[in-house]
Image (cartoon, rainbow, N blue to C red; front, side):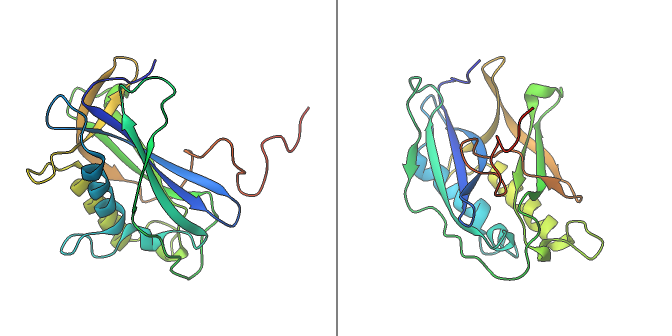
Length: 215
């Protein structure tokens, strides 16, 4: 069942990994302050801060911890109740990505950012996105996410989930089953590494194709 609740927008941040042509996707749902979907300009501003940092908030930006082969990020968004088959419009001027140098972890390694709505808990009231692939500098010598990066990711998520009179956009959890949404109020960041799961199904994955072998 599709999520089609009026007053909401679905936005994808698509990170291109140029050396292989793979695309990593983070998907977000946002709600406006009234019956109309929030403006894409307001959503873009919130996501730029999430990934790119804001003076006085995150000490370091999230994008500075990305794998060297990441060549850019582009946002695509559409109202949740748009007609079926309507593609998301590209939001121009997305935050720039510059490969920072340094050693990189394997391209499928990432960290999970988990979040949920207020109680009661349940599958339709919690979610997760995966941030990566990552540089070696994102982990400590014991192989877990270092404290500085974990703090920055937590602060970035808190900022994205906050509400502001100047930018009335709310980050939401969407329930496809019930066609309802819930505001995100808390979450956590795993210290252990995970693997990137939300990927573009039509591109190569780690330099291999999906039909590399068959029974």
